[in-house]
Every structure is written in structure tokens, then in C-alpha cells.
Amino acid sequence: MELAIILLVFLIAFRKDLLELRSFSLQNEQDKFILKLGLGLLGLALLVAGTDRFVQMLEIKYHPEIFFLNDWLRSLPYNDLSVYFGYNSRILLRIIRAVYHYGFFVPCIFLIIRAVARRDLRSLSLLIFSTFAFHYAVHFPFYFFTEGHQIWYVKGIMVPLFRTISPLDHVFPSMHASMSVTSMLLAWRQPNKATRILYSIFCPLVIFSTFYLQIHWTIDAVAGAIIGVAAVKFAEYATAQGWLYLIIARLNQTWALLRRPASKELSSRG
Image (cartoon, rainbow, N blue to C red; front, side):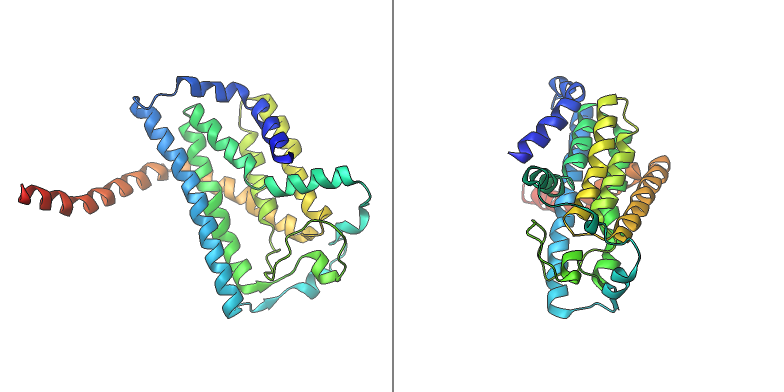
């Protein structure tokens, strides 16, 4: 139910953009190219998610952590904002759970759909260079070599809230915060006022949900926000330099090389 409501809100905000999909044609080479880029970006997200699961298995087995952050996280003033919240409203809890659950991917996914629907190659380039791969590459050293647990774990207080209960220690920096900031900054570039308003409300709410659910410390979100801004700056540079076209050209060359031996073999058999 919560996911359906969130999707409905985003669909309403993006309705004008999504209507452009009606003119989309697989017979049009430009449309096919844009669609391939959108699907490729979604495939990259799945690849990153799969890589993360594999790395988690390595962490559990080999324990590569060399920096231990729990004492530092606990000692910083105002680093635990959860002490200022009340936990008596079931409705508020359901809302915040849903925001935390779906706030990581939904905003980014709709920006991808919007870029495809509008045939907006620049927006797709910004998304490719600023989202999944960039964030994971920057977060990976922190997640792999540091140990820093969630607030509830460090405090040893099991407030009856939903949270990610895991033997892993991925809190600093917050990828929920970094992805939310990146999505919001990219949304602010959209001409659709409803989109800009929605992201200005929803993305900060995602960060708030991590505090409320006793997952992330304040410093996690601050560091994540810096990464989110850096991601957009990097994407702007990469897009201005035309890196997307260079990557596509290289992929096409690689694909041609992979197909060449098979085509020669078939021709020799004929």
C-alpha cells in the first residue's frame, strides 16, 4: 500500500513528462538509442547491487575492517538526533518506514524514466555519471575498511521500529543521504515545477527517516550530502567533456571485436 501511494505521487508529478512516452517508437533509431541508455543505466544499478551483495559476503567471511568508528560516532555532540523524536504515532511510523524503504531508488528511477520519455540525452548522461556507479565507488572504501554500526546497535536499545538489522556495519557515510542529495539536485534542473517541489520535500524526508529509525548518525548524513554534491559536479564535468559518447564508442568497438571471429567462422563454413 505504501509503495503504491508513493508511486502514485511520483506519477502525478511526472504526468506531463510520462505522456511523451505515447510518441515513443522502436522504429525510430533515436528512440531506440535513448531507450538502450535508460535500460543500460537500470542494468548498471542491478550490477552495482549484485556487486554489493558479493562484497558483503567477503566482509562477513574475511572481516577486512581496519578503522573502528563506533566510539567516535557516539562521542560527537548532537550526532544522535533520534533522542529528540517521539515514537508513539503508528501512522507516522508507517510513513517513515515507507520513505526509508523506497526513497533510495524511486526518485532516481523516475528521473531516468523522465529523461527517456523526453529524449533528454543530457539528463541521461548526468544520471549515468552521478548515480549508482559513482556513489558505490566512493562509498566502497568506507564500507569495506571501516566498522561503524547503526545508532540502535551502538546504544544497545531496541526501540520497536523497523530497521535494517544486519551483521554489517555500513553507516558512514550514508548512501541514502548521498543519493537523495544527488536526486534532488538533478530534479532542480527540471523545468517541471511539480517535480522540483516533490523532490525538495521527499529527498530531505528520506534523510530524516534514517535519523528517526535510529539508523544513521548526523555525521553520516553530512558526509553523504557532500558526496551527493560531488557526484553532480563530477557528472557535469563528464557530460561537458562528452565522456558518454566516448564510452559508447568504446563499447561499440568492443562489441564489434567480439562478433568478428564468429562472423568469419560462419562465412568460412558457408
